[in-house]
Image 1 (cartoon, one colour):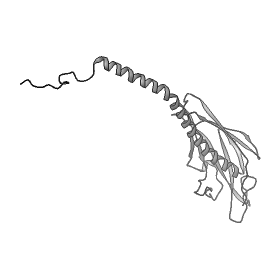
Image 2 (cartoon, one colour; image 1 turned 60 degrees about the vertical axis):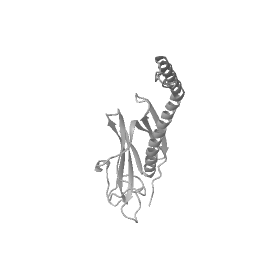
Image 3 (cartoon, one colour; image 1 turned 180 degrees about the vertical axis):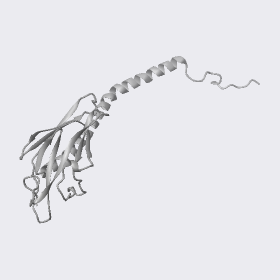
Length: 207
């Protein structure tokens, strides 16, 4: 008896070259269309993400600087930075210095300096903003030093933020301190910057 052969047995398996070529062309077309549709949205998302990160950095710097400027008894420019003088009382019953001057014999308190300085970062072509001064405890208060301190008396400097291209203080008066910080745009590393400005009214505490 002749052997029965299934209808598909013996037919070639897989795709022909024409089918592969057509499938590849269709796949490439789908990729091109998908890229054209979603690439702008991806760029927008990257841009927004960069702006959010930059805003978070600025918010941290702004909150710290504004608080310390408000509490300072004297503010002065320090090259490409800022020096703040805060006065601490000698004991719980005495008053803090009111003029911000360095204490003399018989004064009510002693002055402690806080310095914000730009330190170049050759690896990135920008600078980092550093703070040199008394540490801040968990409650947000400065740790007591017990004596007059200059910025040079503090060995450790804390990095406040990175990616800074400029720091300036165009206005420093007894009633107002205005400062500007320029950041490198994270999505435009070839020199584009974003400027942030803040104005603070010093209100030194008295105890």
